[in-house]
Image 1 (cartoon, rainbow, N blue to C red):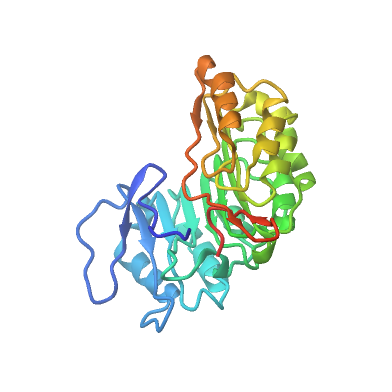
Image 2 (cartoon, rainbow, N blue to C red; image 1 turned 45 degrees about the vertical axis):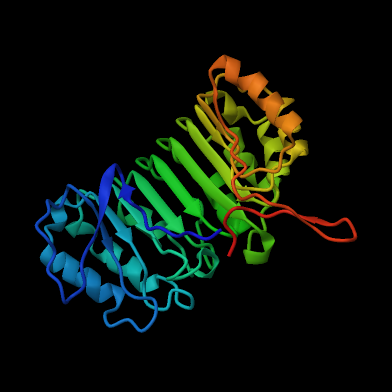
Length: 318
């Protein structure tokens, strides 16, 4: 599966694309929408930094609360260094900014595993009051450990998340973080982490307010489930999301055999490879306690070869 739609909202605000230079933006209150600033990946007539400069000259940026960075030119070959520099240079012009998403591209623009990224932590340093940060694309992505007192939601969507990023997130002090969503992906696209790399996150020591944990889209979903089964952080969660990956009966049995999950509001396992007996066991264990369980198999189809080899796939790869 590929990503086929741009974000339709950010920070509770509907998305609105800042139009190209040949069009005038329709009248809209600057704080009423999540602005999307974008360029063309291929044969761009206007590069992203010029589009952003035009945005800053047109919109009252002192009232902008949410900003989405769409495509930048040659994103398949170019890191968003100039994009990040432009955003950090404009920090004083964006005092109300509370949410930022970097890399809102669909497959036709640039497949998720071809999006080049870089060190995104300068954005958090520049915006100490930022509450939401989202990033799409793992190639070249860096996230060295940091401290940030306001961040409440962190989402990193990739077809392959580098282990050093997982360790950087785990080593960060994020006392306000409530929602963490990591797409681990596959080794083929740079997802080289192991379940042990998640240990600082699963301990919850640096994440005292975490309520929604998603560790998904992973080839090693069974190992993740086994690690989560005894993770201290789980006791304080409301939502646990292990979806979109290669979760089999082995991982589900380990999860159910660990600590109780009946305190959860929701357990999301959609896109899985579970047998019907395991699915029924999940339902019987959790649904009577009022836990909402997402068990849609979706497009999780297996391919079997003549020698008995079975291939299973994450939801979002290339």
